[in-house]
Length: 454
Image 1 (tube, helix red, strand yellow):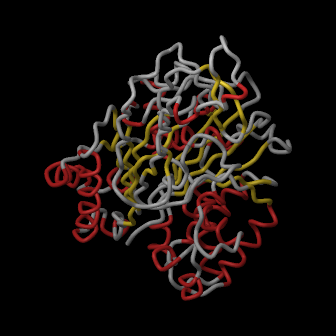
Image 2: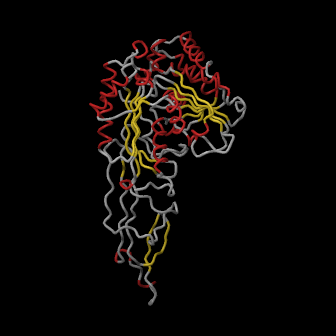
Image 3: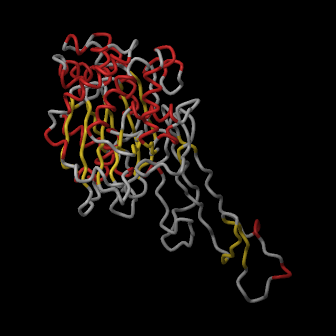
């Protein structure tokens, strides 16, 4: 079961997707830009009738649609870094330029008016892997501009590791087998690159299962990967770190939630004081509910969901939220127009895809999308009114999510009841992006004008 990827579809991650990037899903490849060949004087000789004796010869060349003149001299190749494009092939290393390295004194104007960006093979590579209750996801990226990075490889697969966990308290054999096979692919991808730093995490399924540690020992033996089980507070912080660029500068308060397969993390963020570069520094309260789309659907049923069953699911989650002592920490901001919800999960991205009536899920259109209260109400009502086959037929839901999406909507409705807001922003990003942002910041790759250290 292949999952639509979150993260690979954008050339750069870390900024709001107001301007769409190249499309793509699954394993992201590179498209190589052809280096600009140095031109000889013979190839660009000036017209003799316009050449004045005794003055240096000028040659005309075109650069990005405008004419400029340069003194005749040897010009190095324009060694631009490749950009991510469509396709799912292996990563291509940039060709080595035949000309000598560019001298610091060489005059090579660029549209961004800055020093050239190092080729991708010179940039440090970072990786993040998230093994959740429902999905196994990997991102491999290199840093770009400050606070941003470019995805150079990705993998995502629905493995349903937590299948049956609610009833038995243990990870099932078929579920573990599926996860190990996915992790073997991730291991091969990681070993094929020179990774500077990586963080490989496991969340609620391994955290709560009796045999969770035993399973990760098997993963280390068979896939060659050593995963760490993170606690719920760390999970909440990483989710916030992954969405920092979607919180605009005039925002005063945010309730960020991540509806997972086995747990749901909620963080209350107060931005009324001096703003720190790290959004996670502004968390004033957080909670992790031991309920997610997989566990809730297994308890109440996911295929046939009547309105009564849906209401019962909402009430179950609402009862858990009622015990959250810090739920009122943003009560002074709820009425502000600069307060909103920010959702990062398959539930909200699915709602957004249905809302946009997409024929195929498109991360570029979903990530960063704003939905008003009425739009969310309509989409939830629409999904509750669909039967299982109708949910399967929707291209943004499909058979893999058809039995889980209403459980996610129930969690969303319980959250909206506690923190009513006129606006919800959708984030198709989360833990992996948070891991990468923290790894890169801690490594100092953005200290020098956003360029990674070689």
